[in-house]
Amino acid sequence: MNSEYRFDFVFSFLKGDGYFFMTRQDLIFLDTETTGTGPEDRLCQVAYSFAGSEHEGLFKPPVPISLDAMVVTRITNRMVEREPAFIGSAMFEDLKRIFTGGGILVAHNAPFDADMLRREGLSVGVCIDTYKLAHHLDPEGNIPKYNLQYLRYYHDLEVDDATAHSALGDVRVLMVLFERYFTQMLTSIGDETAVLQEMVRVSGEPILLRRFNFGKYAGLEVKQVAHDDPGYLAWLLNQKIMARERGEDNDENWIYTLDYYLNK
Image (cartoon, helix red, strand yellow):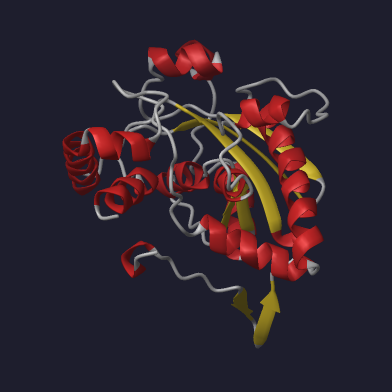
């Protein structure tokens, strides 16, 4: 892997006069529902589970909820009209305390949720991304899709009271999915702390994507398109890089994948 695509993570955190290593008690399982996926969008619902306690809240965002977001989340502008702003809320203060104290964010597509929290003024440090773990633990590419709900049913996970695209429902699925992957990795690694460290390492590196899930080559393998139409990959890579430079989208996985196949 090219060094420019690697990210360094610290596996222990300075606290008081010494260091403490991450444990499962440091994990905060979190999901956000948002007004959209653009650079100006903000969260409108947050749910999380930490230290055995679940929390969920609706918030009035500073920008309107898009129609596309409403279709997915079923959260409307009318529903949040009388809700408080997230910044300064009791949940904001609780999350600030958790992350300041070394809480480790666990999320599916963690960079998205971490970025949404940062837009609200929260400092998120180390993350574990179950989306990347799913890719990592499927080296042969047998799983057709890696979104949370697809993995829920692909792995036949038993999750009680978990409505899809409800923030709390997604958190409950997330926790069961994490447990499956943790157990799977523990079998081969043998030490809980080492498993968490490996999860953080995997989550900090871009993944090599195998198939297009958009555009004219949707469903085809990237390596096949790289052979048949390398010009398309070069064009798409340029589009992704320009979008990142404009602050619109930092799609590290596709940038890494396209660069990999173009220079293979």
